[in-house]
Image (cartoon, rainbow, N blue to C red):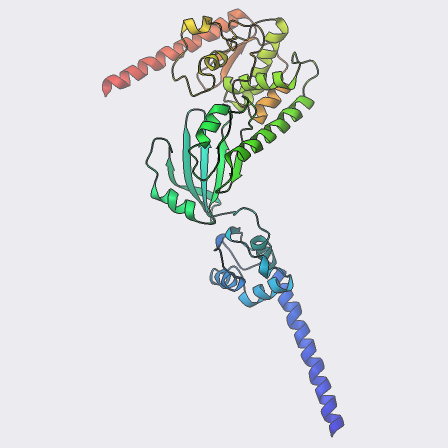
Length: 392
């Protein structure tokens, strides 16, 4: 009898172990296989939260098939204690193991609210926007000028949320003074910048920042990024350029940056200035004259006067030979590469063509014809503007 009981016990144990093994295999498969989510969601993990709350939230939103398996998988991988606060984008079909990895690896939030401090050539603005998980596109919630407009309540609300991301976006062609001056009004930053960095030494780009970051440290990141870009462009430069140093390359790139906003034209514009340098011609470019007036501290806001085109300043390329002594703005990577590798052309003239781009010419006669066309466009636009004003 005892022998039968022992035999049955062993049999039950084997069956139990077999079933347990099957459950473990099934659980692992559930944990690592494609999840049930059919539309992206933004998972918010609040400070002080835990895996139980996160797993239940995921189950409620249909992102996991089992909150218990999610927790057990996180425990098995020893990641339960590594949970990070933030807002995380969960794509359709994401497995439980991938979600655990997302919420425990750290780093910036990947969805939710974002505050972008935009420093443009003509305008500084603060944009509050929120990612729509369904479309993966940001929806603007508010935008304002921090120096002129009343600060909207939503900005202060979002700024106080732990998972809000903050970025500084520098437009290509802004000056170093504009950047440092604009950063003074960014109330998420602390500290001061002792002096304005050298013109051209800051890389136009998007920079993630956190509340409490030091302004000088953020500027140092911009300088390091631009230093690498300049070095890369200098290393890749055409060997026969009439440029003797990375500093001169940077200056040429800044002029290219200010002369055109059309990406496809940058190398053509660069070729004009390279051809002029090779032929010993003056560059005769208006942005350098403007820089001689403003020193990069703001926008001129009007057309140049004839007297200013004749005025002697170190940057007036209608008066001086060759390049000006410093850059006139912070050029982006595309302009640096255009200066390093310009098109091969015979162009030595260009003028606006009315479309936002330029008409290029080899001879003075061709250039004069292009200028005449541009003057006609200007006259027609002025007449239209006057007519519109009169109607009002």
